[in-house]
Image 1 (cartoon, one colour):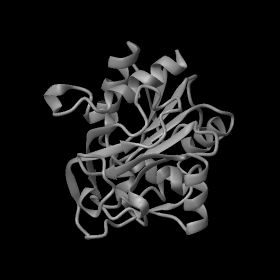
Image 2 (cartoon, one colour):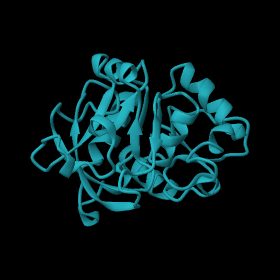
Image 3 (tube, one colour):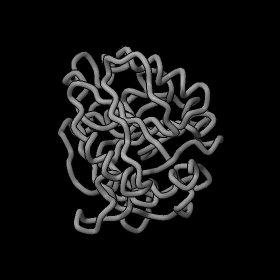
Image 4 (cartoon, helix red, strand yellow):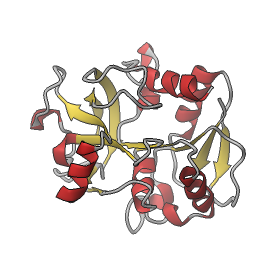
Amino acid sequence: MKAAIVLFPGSNRENDMAAALEAASGVKPDIVWHGESDLPKADLIVLPGGFAYGDYLRCGAMAAHSPIMRAVVARAQRGTPVLGVCNGFQVLTETRLLPGALMRNAHLKFVCRDVHLRVENSQTLFTSRYESGQVIKVPVAHGDGNYFADDETLNRLEGEGRIAFRYCTPEGEIADSGNPNGSIRAIAGIYNETKTVLGLMPHPENAVESALGSVGGAPLFDGIVAALA
């Protein structure tokens, strides 16, 4: 399974993502500069975390207009799986590959800590190694992770099984105490209509080794590799 990771000026998790993908697949991902116009052949495209273009204007707004993003959108529309994490999730909403928007955290503070997530849909290429309802621990690091969409969009996401993860307590309860940023309906990650594009705010790539505090993200990468091998 070959992956391509897009590198924007201001990205800071591309190496973490590459290490997690290589550990799962045995294949070193390609790192593609945002100014390129073409993507190499890849089974998976990844938009990593960071602060693309310094988060000027609006998080992900400038990155969404990078030359490489035309190729990313075209590949995604043809069915190539795309994973966007943190800043990558923001870019995916700015390109309209995913609905909704990521706003400032409700408490207006940057949050950097471990959180718990409940797996809402395990029947996708990204989550097949999880069980629905399973609770995992992964870190977050963001100031603009407050997911918002209108009621019609939210109801459609719910009805179509497109909510991937929700913030929760360690016991799996959806409660304010488990929500680090105020995201509506505790949403931490969503899919597109075909469930081939996943955007999520937490960082699974930083939860793949016990030495890092958790291995909750490892099944995500193992599942992707198994699905795309």
